[in-house]
Length: 109
Image (cartoon, rainbow, N blue to C red):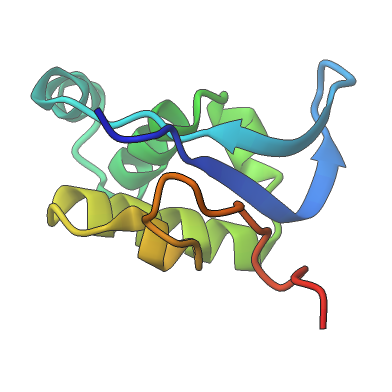
């Protein structure tokens, strides 16, 4: 089983619940997650938001507070996941299990 990957926000924020949100564990989605989202909406944008929120384990309200850069990356991760590609590469991290996980854009010079 692959190591769990984290989605690290470039622009952390406080949620409506008052929790500082700076990273989330990425959950691989299943067909049932897509089916549930499709049953709730026919709007492609809302569907994508629902799947991103599910993938990151957050509410739609919290997803709505993402900076545009973080939102774009979340969508890229979702799309790479749905295509069966290596999401670690999208996150700018090594797929090697022992490699140190670094935040995007926050790597030491």
